Image (cartoon, rainbow, N blue to C red):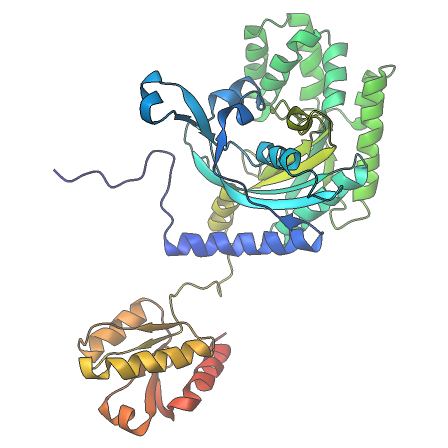
Amino acid sequence: MAQRTEPARGMRDFLPEDIRRREYVIGIVKRVYERYGFEPLETPAVENIETLLGKYGEEGNQLIFKILMRGEHEASGKADLALRYDLTVPLARVVAQYQSKLPRLFNRYQIQPVWRADRPARGRFREFYQCDVDSLGSTSPVVEAGLCAAVSDALTQLGFSDFVIRINHRELLTSILSRSGIGAHQHGDALIALDKLDKIGPEGVDNDLANRGIEEQARNALLQVFISRASMNHVAAFVKGDTPGEAAVANLQAIAELTAQTSAAGKIAFDASLARGLSYYTGAIMEINVADLAGSLGGGGRYDNLVGMFLGQNVPACGFSLGLERILVVMGERNMFPLTLMTTPADVMIATFDAAGASAAMRFAATLRGAGLRVLVYPDPEKIGKQIKYADSRGIPFVALLGENEIESSTVTVKHLAAQTQETWHQSDAAAKILEGLKQRG
């Protein structure tokens, strides 16, 4: 019986078109991030398990892909390594490890896959790419404003216009929870439940809060603030007299004022219901939402204590992560990829007449490649009509014919398949002629 050929559940194979689309998006994101002064970083796919555990909260720990010990320790059933869950915790480890080599203000972007033992769903996979951008070393609201501008620019250049960057603050949430009558020991549970508001609705959140032991009166007071989508002024009045809450409001106002001076002006919206479940956030939190799309295209926030877990002293940090897979899905559904996006493996294919002409074909291909063209040499001396049909099926615009006469005269006959024309040129002129034809083709 033949073996199964589909990839593991929640994983995917990426065919050439998938990769071209992904590289198109990554290319735009990288160029935008670099314009904002961010530098590239990469970290290993595998981390020591203690690096990851305890950084993502109760539910996050359960979604870590653990790697069992190997060799003589395999029978123990214990795990000592894990696939990275995100790019933020590995960044914190790197900053602690290479503190003496990194600048005091370290701005980095990182675009790599991460893994989560999650339940697969539409647009949700167990292996997926993240596009992270982070700034370490400053507590200034200039950092948050810059991050919002960078991700806004990236999405705008990809063709998005109907997005909003929702913003809130973890200290403000803490103040709201306390004013609602929820004890500090239940704050973590409450935030996990509130983070699901968009997915399960108020009634679902209320049930989750109840299951976590939070009293009805506190639940009602809390949900009233969240369901009403209270304005900044309303929430400021709600937490008046609580020093951390008032400081959080002031910080959000400063971020909004600074962002208004950037290309992200008009994209920021305060949302008291935004919680974000990751436990390492300490300050402002952000999330990008697009009209008529469940879930978000990315999110982030300030995490001033995370590096300190590795270094022993806190380093101010703030970051944003774009969900590349969701961006690709939405762009595909909305036909947002440019028609000119490369969809063919070559600019020109050299047909093979017989084995004797293979050497000349390879030599001519090297000349064309040296001029910057993408060239495919058809390997088998099949009927020329069949070779041309193959090139046409792959969208290759030009076919070069090197028969015995062309080889002897150092010429080449080039067929332009879309225009249904052909011309014979000296081989030394062919590259320039084909490049000109590609330019006219658009």
